[in-house]
Image (cartoon, rainbow, N blue to C red; front, side, top):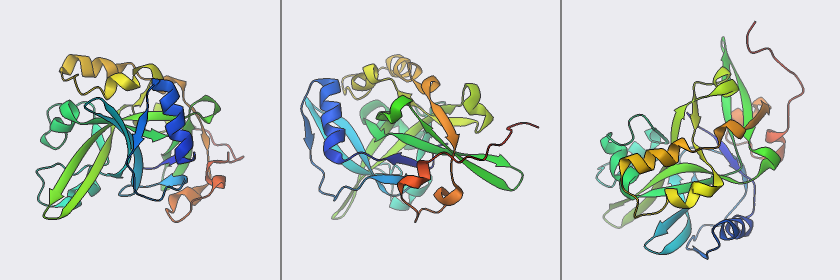
Amino acid sequence: MCGRFTLTRKKKDVIEEYQKRFNREIMDISRNIYSESYNIAPSQEVAVIYQLEDRLIFDYHQWGLIPYWSKDKKIGNKMINARIETIAEKPSFRDSFYNNRCLIIADGYYEWLKRGKEKIPYYFTLENHKLFAFAGIRAVWQNANEIVNSCSIITTDAVGDIADIHNRMPIILDANIEMDWIDPKLKEKKQLFHILDSRSNNDLDYYRVTTKVNNTNNNSNDLISPKNEQITLFE
């Protein structure tokens, strides 16, 4: 799974970077006060980019998808990740998969290696700590006068060395297919899974970090500093 990640760039830098990638203007409709974060946790607001008709939109969504038909928004607390194996059929995610896809913007994520009762955090990032996008789905939930925009990160089986730390991993889209993923005209299952299969997860670097990241109240750049102490994954 993916239960914590980072976005350490300023909002204007994120928007400028993606406008260059897409060679298109991105409309910022966010009203939230933006703050870079080294410890983004479920239920918090996360940066997303999606396409609405012919417009590219930047906004913030609650991390934890609330299906539009749900009677209780608390369901989002259990919906931070959507498994690729069941996303096209599971009622909670199916409509969003076909009709409401998004990019969830990040520059790294955390995962924990379990050794007995100990949980050892690792930080994963692309080369040069560059921006990337998780493959995401989104939903708009409304009840009376309350509207909540929410999202979920798609996960898959971990590959390579990453599987030594955790058996699941978030899907990070290769930069050249990000626009394809959020194209609202694409609704064919085979095409969508082809995009998800063209991911860049094999390019990830990772290293051990401080256990301070375990506490969501901690949010500073030392959380992503390499921890000097090394461990052996298998003894």
